[in-house]
Image (cartoon, rainbow over all chains, first blue to last red; front, side, top):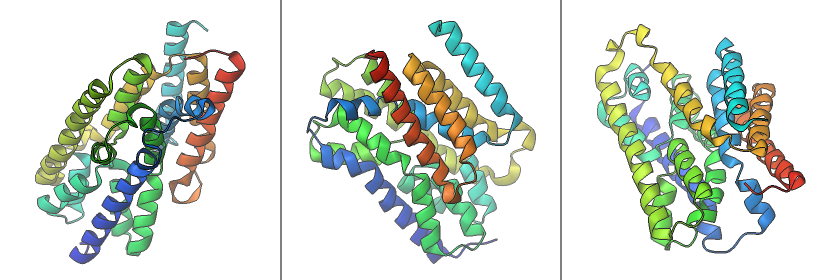
Amino acid sequence: MIISTATLWLVIAGLAFGSWLLRFSFLGIIGNKDLPEWVKRHLRYTLVAALVTLLVGVWKGNLMLAIAAGGITLYSMLNFGF
Amino acid sequence: MVFGVLAAESGLDIFTAVAFSMAVIAGAAQFTALSLLQDQAPVLIVIIIGLAVNLRMALYSATLATHLGAAPFWTRAFVAYAILDHSFALADQKFQNEPDMSLPRKLAFYFGATSLVAVIWVVGTGFGAWLGARIPDWLALDFAMPIAFIALVAPALRSLPHVVAGFAAATLSLLLASAPYGLGLIIAAVIALVLGAEVERRLGVAS
């Protein structure tokens, strides 16, 4: 299917501006203000929470998911000794 | 590169595909938008859903603000433009492990990490669009992304609260996979990070 040029550029412009706003949101507002400790504590887990979620999104419904989850468990057990 | 191939198959020329990647630089949102466009979805819906996929960028923004908030306005504007999953992952881990880094060094590390990823993303799009459908299926390029994410996640699981957050994210995103507009992703991520923080507080460990 060929997508019309005008539609496409409208979507590109909208996504570009919207994505930048999302990315700038907190960097812009918070700036150099110090955040309360409980907020900073939560933000330490952004990385793990978001990446694992993305990973599952990419692989959902796939057998490989089970293998990956098992692999990550094993890896963290070996390395952190829980 | 996979995006480029998909774009070519959707009838985009190389210039448009590369412009798309340069302007938006967010793989998941671009894939979503392109497939919705192919399904003839209205422009506004395409943009809103594409942005919903990108909501996690606001979380990255808040997290990076704790590290780079002291930078001048225009520097922060550029930091924001270049926030990507991979460079955020590298930078956040580095800054958490070395809290004493000076701001110029943090910025240098961040831009070093992110410009490499961004350049590969844009050049890859062009290359993929140029190759188009000439790439054989057995190369299984669609596996590159999950493999890259695993490599990024594994070292990030470095304390019990991190592991809890990781497992919560995995479980919740599976349960919420049927949520409309890909919103399950952001909901699962937010609950998971709250859980991680709660476990850290109860254990009384600083990470």
